[in-house]
Amino acid sequence: MIFQKSSPLKGELTVPGDKSISHRAVMLGAISEGTTRIRRFLEGADCLSTIDCFRAMGVDIRRTPSEILIHGKGLHGLTQPKSILNVGNSGTTTRLISGILAGQNFTCELTGDDSIQKRPMKRIITPLTAMGACIESIHGNGCAPLRIQGKPLNPVSYNSPVSSAQVKSCILLAGLYAEGQTSVTEPYVSRNHSELMLSAFGAQVECKDTTASVLGHPKLHGQSVDVPGDISSAAYFIAAGLLIPGSEILIKNVGINPTRDGILRVCGQMGANIQLLNERKEGLEPVADLLVTSSSLKGTVIEKGLIPTLIDELPVIAVMAAFANGTTIIRDAEELKVKESNRLDIIVHHLQVMGADVTPTEDGMMIKGGAPLHGAVLDSHLDHRIAMAFAVAGMAAEGKTEITRGECVDISYPEFYRDLTALTIL
Ligand code: S3P
Image 1 (cartoon, rainbow, N blue to C red):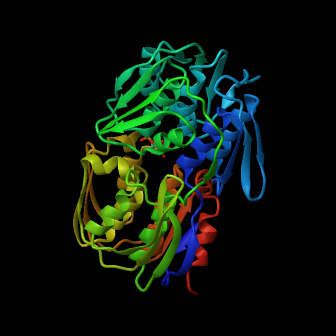
Image 2 (cartoon, rainbow, N blue to C red; image 1 turned 135 degrees about the vertical axis):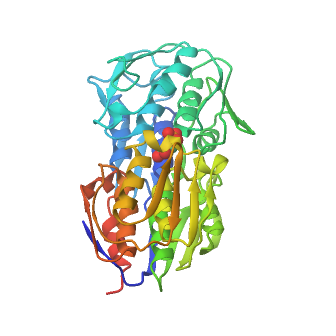
C-alpha cells in the first residue's frame, strides 16, 4: 500500500463495529439460552475466528447481511470440538474462550498463527489453575497451543498484576462455572465490556474501584446487541483529520465508553479540536458522533491509569506526537511489547526511519515532535494497528510511504484503505 502527503480529508464515515464487543456478544450468545442477535458485528478476521470456534463446539451461528444470529446452547450445552480450535491471530479469542473452556465437561486444544503462539498465556494459566482448572501450554513455554481439560471450578479473588481486560474477562467467564463469587482486581481499570454485557445477559456483576466480580451459575438469556463503532478504528481517522491541514470529518456512532476513551482525553491534552455530538447509549454502551477538525497539536504525558484506556491507540497516538509541537512522554506501556507484535520497538523504529526524534525507554518512549517526517518503506510486521497507524503517518509526511504486508488490516478493519481514500479530496 502506497501513501502520499494527502489533500484535506472531508466528509463523514461510520467505522466498523467494536472488536471487543463483537467477540463478547458471540461468546455470551453461545452460552446463553435462546437467541442472540448482533447488529453491526465486526466482520474482521479475529471476530470470525471466534464464530468458527463456537461453531466447532456445536453452536448454530448464522450470518445474514444485516446481523449475526446465534442459537445459544446455555452454560453447559457446548460440545467437544472434533479438531483443534483455531483462534487465528486473536488474543481476545484465545484468552476469553479459555475461561469458558475451563468450565466445560470435555477436553480440547486451541492454537493460532505464529504471533499468537508467542503471546503470553501464563497470565491466564495462573488464575485459571487457582480456580482448579486443568490448563497447560503444550510446548511448556507459557504460550499456545493450549490443552484445556474442562471441570467444575472454584471461585477466586484474583489480584491481577496487569491491567488487562482479556485476563479479567477470562476469569469472569470462568467464574460463571464456579459456585459463589469470583473477583478480579487490577492495578487500573481495563475496558469493562464484559462486565456490562454479562449483566445485560442476566449475570450478577459488581464493579467497585478496580475490582469486578461475578456470581457463578447464572441463567444467561440471549439478547439483541447493537455494536457501537470501534473507537480503536476511529482513532486512525481522528489522527488523520487532526494532522492533515484543512480537514473536517464526522465519524458517526463511535463507542465512547470511559474505559476506552483515553484517546479523546489525550487529544484534549494535545489541543485537538474534536466535538462530541449526539451523545447517546447503545444498550449499556455510550456512543457519540465525533466532529474532527484539523488542529495544531502540542506534546503531552501519557501514563498510569490512562494507558489501559488507549492501549490499542498508542501506535497512532505516537504518530500524532511526532507531528506535535514539543515533547510527548509515554510511560507504563510495557504491555505494548506483547501485542500482535512488539509495538514499542516497531513504533520507535518506524518513526525514526521517517525522521522523527524518538527515544525508546523501558516502558514507553519520548517523542520530540516537530521534526519534518518523510516517507519510507515500512513493514506492518503483520500487525493491523501498525499498518493503519503508519498509513496515517504516510498521509501526513512529505513524499511517499509504502506499507508492506498491509493486508493485515482485515484483522480489525477490512475496508480501512477504501474508507481512508473515500475521504480524500482529489
Ligand atoms: C482487548 C483487550 C486489550 C486490547 C485488545 C482487546 C479485549 O488487550 O489490547 O486489543 O477485547 O479485551 P489486553 O487485555 O491484553 O490489554
